[in-house]
Image (cartoon, rainbow, N blue to C red; front, side):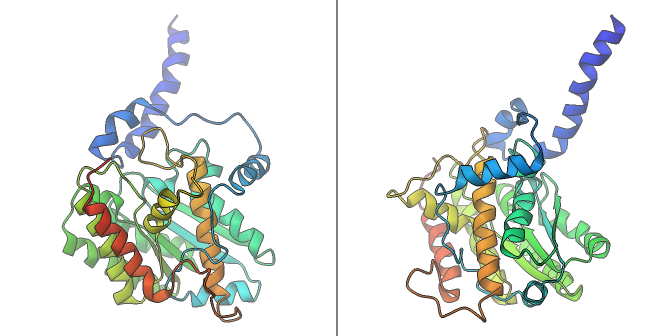
Length: 314
């Protein structure tokens, strides 16, 4: 009987230990739901087959323009590496939506998907995307890890997903922007390109005004520091408002994190945006089909944020 209890209880203890760090990433409104629901692992399938199945599932589902959301900036190191067919190391740092909470398996997280999407676009380059996401972190936590991560991995591109937990915890805004500037300076001093990723759309935010303000803050810092920024907020808002082409549910059961489909859609759009940015010198001028121009990227996200601030949480 003792051995039987050991075999039953040990897996539960391991699961609890894995989930505890991620619980801090969840806002109060979603905490109970996330504590009660553990992401279910998909049936065993090799990574290649799983990736192909996910590729097929999002074809024609989430509308991603070929040039992606405008990053409003340059990625010179990334551009050089991909143009010359050299290896490219990408460091993805962030919280639970980088770590991949809500995905049924690691291969469904956005960093893993991004590696796959970029490899398809640049087959001559050996591309590696490192997932350095930790659930529950705010910008201050990520900043304390950044220097060591840069030294250990020597990345060519750092994608910094930030702001969501800071907004939900209503951290000091001036401190938040100072931390972003400090981190971006560290990334540049390391010789890597820096790319910010803003907040995901979260209609359930208890304080939509504060949430929207952090979207605007990130775009202001990006503009001030001449840092490219990938706006998940603007892209997900566009998907939600495109009534002519409804997008399937992209959220996990806690209605906060993304699901496998959501991560795949976000990654595909990000890969398209990076490709457009690094290939821009050789590309023809953008036509009327362009989603946003560099001049309007910040304004578009800010307008969406202001609109969200004026609406009640849903």
